[in-house]
Length: 282
Image (cartoon, rainbow, N blue to C red; front, side, top):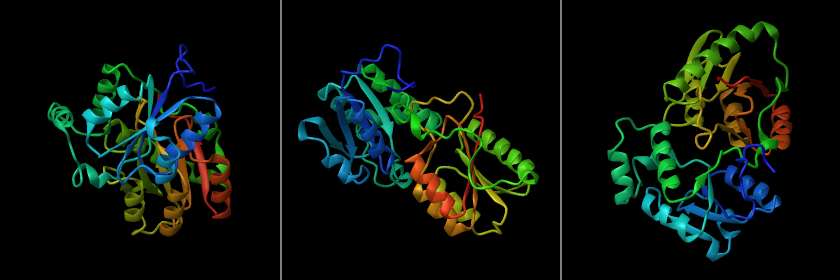
């Protein structure tokens, strides 16, 4: 069914998708349904795709505002979710403007000395576990969409390898420090580093420089917790690369989700984009 499921996984037990925005939660629902998994949905107002929300009957879905942690935990119990998967992003700005924290969320955030993806999602994962729901590896059911191999599409001249190695080294260190997952480098120079603003904003900043020969690198941190913050590359990222003139992307293999992989690689080839995969940091 999926090599990322626990060995004692019960396929008859309900799985709740805690859904942010984008195609990822939609594809996850399709894959899990095809495997015969009974699904439930925790949706966020203004984030979860309407089509996904509407695909669930009322009894199997709950809609909450971003920040309502207590309501989410109660929803998992109400829906009888034995398992859960976090899928899709929340608009970064909403964590500063538009957040509706309940008492549970306020207490959690106040307990954290540092507030980044690792600490926030790690604490939420602990709360989910505490109510009796097992938070699964976010790659579960998405096996066929993982980046694998070396050159996925396009051509990559061997003389550019030192520049790629430099980008991988910088991206890995940035991820290790919990700053972000991506960088854009060009001929040994770092053009932009991804932080809280997300991938698209980073690519836009990098696009303000000369981008011929630039490489966008996306990776995971060493000892990544794959229950959350799994890197994703989809058609929206390809569009942003075309807009900014960045024609090469390299992602961590077996760690990065290429959404609707076959279609994405075809689209990348049509747009003249080279996609590479490299070993994820251990």
